[in-house]
Image (cartoon, rainbow, N blue to C red; front, side, top):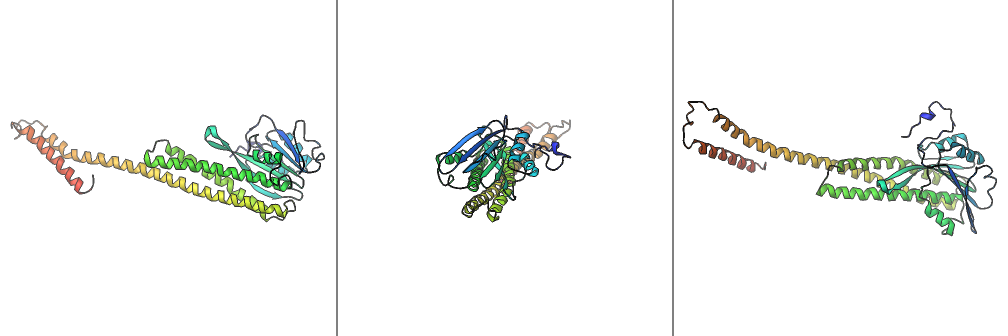
Length: 350
């Protein structure tokens, strides 16, 4: 959970960035396209007048970095976004959701960005504003999962250049959900390796990794569950911003989110069962060790007693002067030990 100390006591609609700074500066990139052409350029100065400059075709404005509140606020004013919507965009710890407004849809989802160096992933918030001819996307850093979508727009592959901003919103959400499966596949592969190691040569670090994977599965459940609800709302809502021919694609990405949720539940159960198996195997190994030590101690109890009796060295002990006393006592002690071992074996304690 990210720190909200700056928002404590603030009035509703106060523009405060909640979260980590993941980019050097807030940058905007504009993509306008139609069936015939594509134009892309960075917005270096300010967002002032950008709404009026939107011409024919579809406009996609992508914002990387949310820590510069004034830049996000200026863009929000250009498109008549309310202060509450901008507040939710700047709060990167917000729950995924769908809000239906009069002239736009507000969508919040969580994007999983892989980090191969750490063998993990980073969770970033993605906010979408879907209008009649434009789409605004707000993300925390420059790294995202939209390279394939940008390539499709550039080369005109598929129907994205012939469709509206609702199809572009579907393409972005589909890329986000598809990336969930890559993360889930990575976790599933690691769980398989841990399972093999657990059955062959378990190590002391396995317990920590089991806890880590289980924690990641719980985090993914908290992320994907509300995303599934938001996508379900987009399939049911009768907003004119989503065309009937595009609604079927949102149903498809919703089905993918449901499938991802089922995989998360399976991975969480698998991680929990492997953790229990790991603990039970450790407990079993400890019990075996204690059993062996107990049997050894049990065998040496009578031997210690005999050695203690004949080690008292009283002057008038009857066996003290025997010339064969020492070897006879050793043989007797050996017989006691062998007898106890045979008894333990008969009881299947060995």
